[in-house]
Length: 106
Image (cartoon, rainbow, N blue to C red; front, top):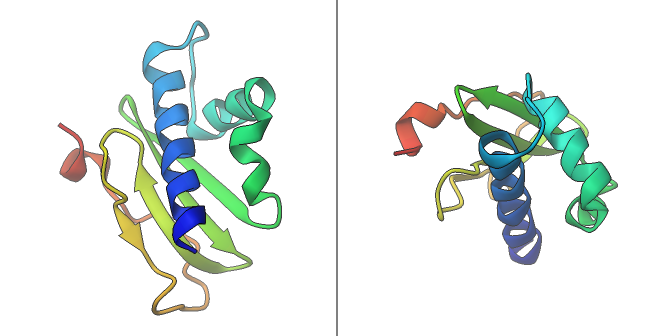
């Protein structure tokens, strides 16, 4: 799971970068994730059997990786730290973004 977490952190930073520095005006986290999926499919390939939720909070991206309705990893792409891991204590119906980027982004 640690390797997957590292790849997810990389994806979150890529999505965050597309919001901040991309050539296209982005209106939502989902749109940013779709652009990255199209332009860099290798970034999302490790997650084909998972659900990824993306949210834009200001100019920051927050991504959540879930397996069915269970949250595994949540990350804001604005920093170098993997923000939240949930795989140690799995909970049903937890696939909801809870991270607030204004608390972890500078």
